[in-house]
Image 1: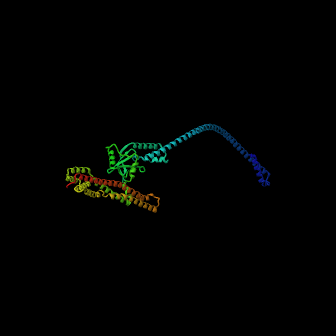
Image 2: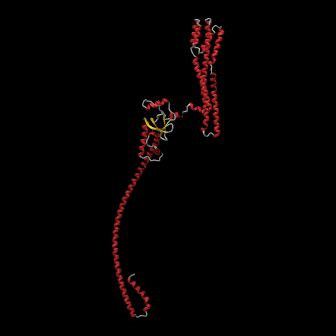
Image 3: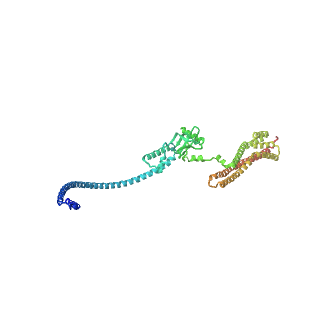
Length: 479
């Protein structure tokens, strides 16, 4: 709305409001006031017009200035857009190049990752093999470093870095070097009493280890769980111990060793001797042992007796025949007296004492002398035969009692634990073994001793007949 229109509107409103008041006034005053008011309004409108024109001019100047600024800004933005578009094209090209590089790197990474996984798998497999080798080697007892890292790698709880692989190689090399050496060194072992003790340790490669202390010399076993060497519960023989000590002192070039890497030595520990089995036979086992002892005493006594009573009877008879040809009967008797402790000599002596008798009577005298010697020759042989006969019966009795004990255990505890039944089974088998061990050699020895006694009796009968013939051939004697 223009200023003139606003003024006319204002005047209209004013006249409308003042019409009732002006109606009664002087028209002249009204016109004067109207003229003055119109003049004021015109001046005011002109002033407002000038102000509006000035404001419009200022606005146009500002708009022109702003248009120039905007044009410059648009030009700058267009330039910047062109630069950004160029930069975008360069970045797109670079992004495409980086994408291609990323693809190449991804392919190489996949190949490298496959190689690394394969290498790690090989390292873990080797770690497992090395751990199995090293943990079972007695050389590990002398390693200063911990080998737990081998199990960590093998169980995939630890990634094998270069330092770890170098430790694996050094550990394997140290074990291999020790496995190829024979060395004597000072170390600590678990003695037979279960205590840690210092000792001089001999290691023969990875096969055998021995020790020497102030009190004893023996073999060592290796415990992989505790990485320690322990003395075997049973000491070697004295000759073996002397050989070990001589080798450790450098006085010998040979030493006993277990090429089975401890297998034979473990069998030596677990081996049960005959005397250790005897108590397993129970009371009947000891009875059989007593039977064996009694029979052994009889055998020894009979062997000693037969050895004392045996001599060259043919030489004595030849001597008697030569002296009888000279009718020197007293010399014949003296020849027999020199062997008075021999049964044959006593029989011949009895024959010479009765050489004046008739043939039948002389034969009876000699037969009587032979019969007197028979009991001493057959002494205890029947007892030995009886012991040989009752020994297997005692063994059978022990078998029965052992099986009874086994069935009793089964009744009380069931058959779930074989160790509960082992005592009864051991008693059954050990008594049978003891009975057979006693009976078999005693039967054999009884037969031999009986044949020996029969041979001695036959020899006396033969020599007695020969003496009768000698006496009769020389016409008897006068003695």
